[in-house]
Length: 147
Image (cartoon, one colour):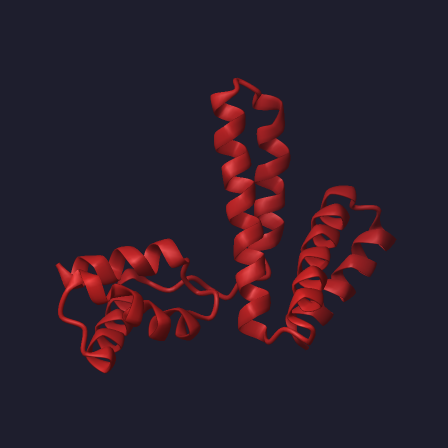
């Protein structure tokens, strides 16, 4: 079952069980996926759907940071709960060693020798991650190797 179908199934399950936070979080994720499909004018593949889930998690982390800056701790538990729910839909995280070896392979494939060619490496590396590492983590690994 693909990610979108899993989300739809879990949404129905959350509605049956009266889990409000889970229901609203899954609805937000499905809405983001559907919005991306409309703008793309077609179905998203699994990697694109995972990228949207990661984007939603990043948004919640930014919400937590903003709430801390604004001295509004009442927003933090809700955002943390939503992050936990969304993380269940991501594949297991990649170890730093795995990420580094994939980055080395992408660097070798692109022939990059300096930090200026980082974009070429990232074009190769990001699709291969498939939600197992964030763009920030990949960027840090590539930057470390190219310096």
